[in-house]
Every structure is written in C-alpha cells, then in structure tokens.
Image (cartoon, rainbow, N blue to C red; front, side, top):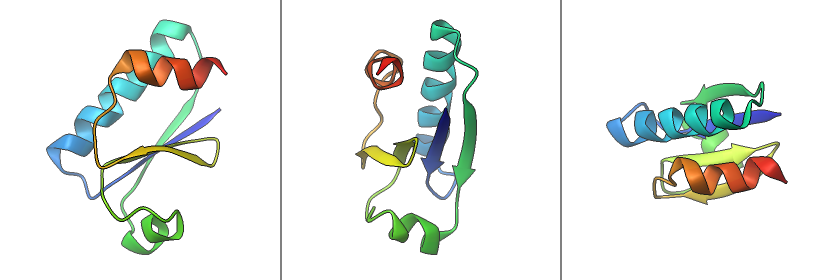
Length: 77
C-alpha cells in the first residue's frame, strides 16, 4: 500500500503525515508513506488545496487534516 502526503511541508502537512503513520501502525499495515512537495506533481492529482492524502493513487482528502480514525477506514478497504 502506498500513501502519499501532498503539501509543501507546512505544520498541517506534518500533522497529516503523523495521522497517516498512526493509522497504518494501529492497523499493522506496512504502508509506504512518502511526501510529495513538488507543486507540479500535486497539481497533476488535481489538488489545489493542501494538505492532501493519496492512498494507492486515489485522492482521499484535501484542504483538511483527516484524523487517524478516518484514515484507517480508507486503509481497511
């Protein structure tokens, strides 16, 4: 499973990354979590507001910080 955190490295982006790592750890999923800071790549996903989270190529949320419980629901599917 691949999780991408889209953003420029702001505090909100870091919090989203922490929530994603927590969700994966609580589920025992060995997810690959990467940060995408390149604006061009972020725009390729159609995201105009960061932070954003992408799970296996699908944008799940943008412009807000989903909590670990919400992220876990996406990872379980």
